[in-house]
Image 1 (cartoon, rainbow, N blue to C red):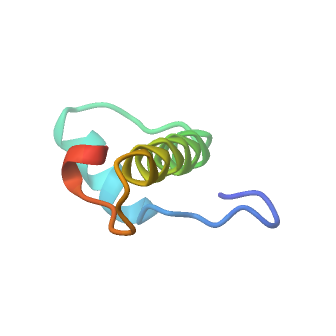
Image 2: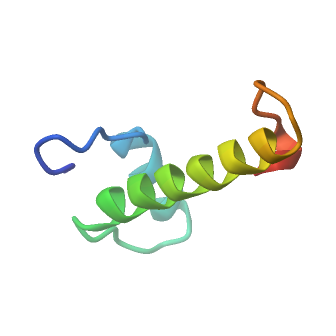
Length: 62
């Protein structure tokens, strides 16, 4: 579960379903870790887009 003030950026049930398909269990901290990874990835992508003079984030920026 995401901490107060930190938005959950992934659908927990979907992540758990995907992990379960691999015959694994999902620790409770996985969702928070994934949300932090997404936030970091977006921040880096935004900086790259700005550095290239764009105001649109593209897949290539990530």
